[in-house]
Length: 260
Image 1 (cartoon, one colour):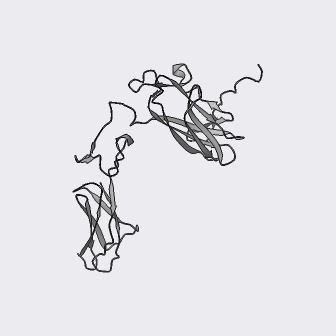
Image 2 (cartoon, helix red, strand yellow):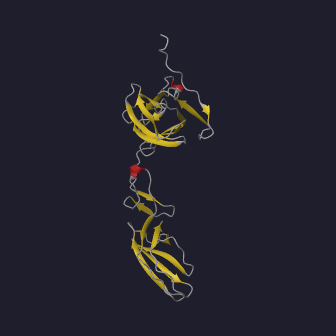
Image 3 (cartoon, one colour):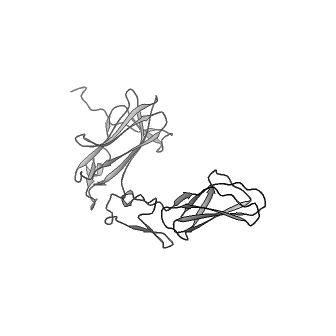
């Protein structure tokens, strides 16, 4: 019947402020049915992690982001969601928008949707136009069984030393990364007033790193031209040795130390 027709799919417009150089103006809630035309269904197909021959995404966690703004106004609420074809929400994002592009992200768990289809939907704020510059949808690398389970208990540095999973900064195998730097802060070190004189201070790191490289910097962000701080590591003890190179009265300082 006249008046019952679905609104036409929005047409991209040029927008130099967008990272893609264009934007999709949304004035009504939109289902992004054109993201998987190759499969003929106008949907995003979810497949098993062992085979992606007929699916857009593995059945795993995904990270969905979008860049958007509103045409006018500020503090307006935009909405982006990953849903089933029956419009049950799997994951969603609601974020306040201004007339400047900003990025919003959310995570969605597709592990129970293998063999099913999902869709992306977006809705503009009330009485405003949502300018959608881009959408990205990526599987979590550490949740996707690419070449077998990732179950490492240690990580090897290029120099051959091994960092165990107990090293501080190791956020766990499932987090997908390991921070190789350890840090600590010394107490106050008062340098010698005589050239060649030394003064030391220590601090403790969370894991043994004997012989590793360390760097020290004064916690107040300043540099004293008449002293040189050097770092040595034995086990978990970090020693900062401050050597005076010119006679004078160098200031006592505490030092932040980073060990690699």
